[in-house]
Image (cartoon, rainbow, N blue to C red; front, side, top):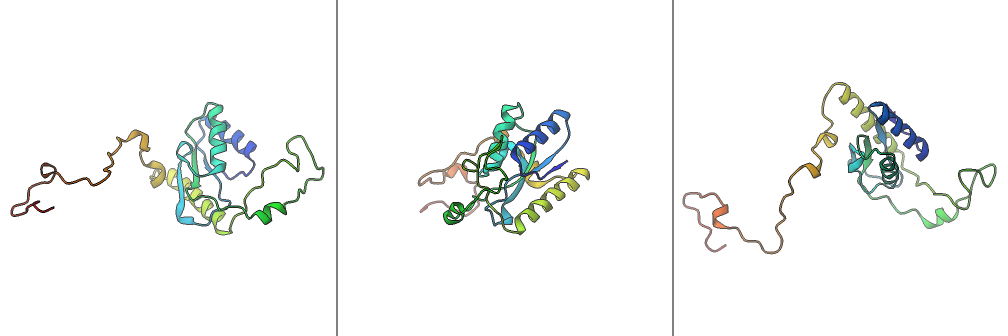
Length: 177
């Protein structure tokens, strides 16, 4: 199943239903306000970051008992800030100013997107589906999650090489370092 639904409630309902049925699904997260196609990733929803749509979906799914197991296409690019002039010029197009789900004065304004980002997300989704059918790895999704790997110790400050940590090379010396 490929999910490219923009409505958050419908997206969550579809993803939850797929998860309950054991149906594989790959879901598009937020491309709005992004411009760099090289930052697109395909990972489990639990590994998404910097994506407001993915955060809402992840939190809602977690509340429904689905902390992981949903493959997502997303970008680690920070969303561009919405132009305040454009945001202030927003006008509601609802036939009635209020309905059971939203009011025109209290609603989220969704970021627009450049033409190539939805297309790139679609290509990443299609490539993921084809590679899954062929039982081939999808690079960013099939990496071992960082929480399963031992953490590397970071070297801070002016760390010096220890002579016992460097393999000996005939004729080489560490004196003067």
